Image 1 (cartoon, rainbow, N blue to C red):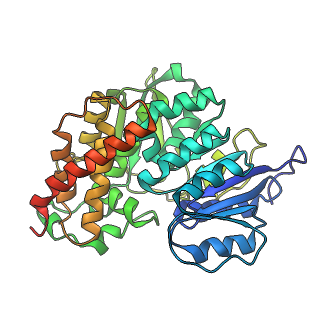
Image 2 (image 1 turned 90 degrees about the horizontal axis):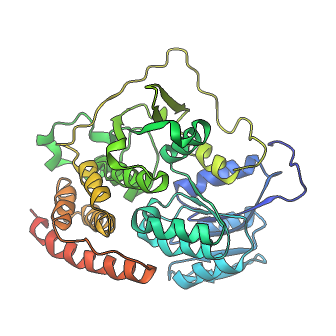
Image 3 (image 1 turned 90 degrees about the vertical axis):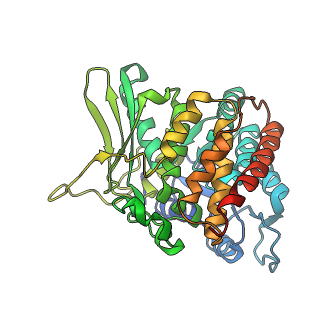
Length: 391
């Protein structure tokens, strides 16, 4: 158990995407600090049985099955919501202090806005929300007096370091990247990469989409855009360095030349619980302490020729407007094609490059305009991808 709560009120938590890697890590963390937190609602998409298992274990108020899958009715006294609209209704209807948005991909965008507009803090693991609608989200959060708290291990580390030292002391942000499963693979062999190989991340256990993104380093590109927006930092003040051990989660380089980093085991329970527990008494022993004896850490330069997605992401930061949306949607579509076996691994980044060559200089000022832009990007991506299908 965690610390004794300073008040009798527990923090009410809602988890969106409770069956994925972030959601299951959150459940592990919450189970250890049940004196401080109350899980009130969860959502799943296709994994209905996992959602029902959570409902049997926890005294939930509500659950949402956001897909249209057929399923047996719940036997517990839990309100059940269905479909995409049901997800938004559950977020708005259910009393909660913080919503952990762990939905994968662009599907999580509307949920982020729904949480903000219903005056709930958002522990954000859905990086696409910030990448595609960053300023809109930050403005909405300020307007509704709620917080956007980053959950990605890199951004959680940067958030803690910046709060500790003060933004005025920061010269650059340093994002670390494991390099994925192909960090040392010769570029000449990229054409023969299989789906199974791309899904085998050397450090983290994650879902299919994010595993492929980590293999192409598109995930690091998305994180770079997210960091620029969250912390108000230009792209030339954000560094990316390869760090295979995934022990140093991020660093800041201060104006006096020093480096400060956040160092812990690669376990997502830590950043999740730090986000959910923001401003609560310090949570003790959230994860197993890191043993420094015989610990070896290495850092190297990112090979942007073999992994160009970070370069494309920096371009999107510099150009702004709808370029981050184009990056996100084009990559998402290309990853789906690769997972479906219709394109080769190198085609993912090539398709993204082609889509970014279009003019995305118009600004999206609403969720509706982001949705319309996303549809347009998808249409162009589908057209550009034809050249790589079956090749």
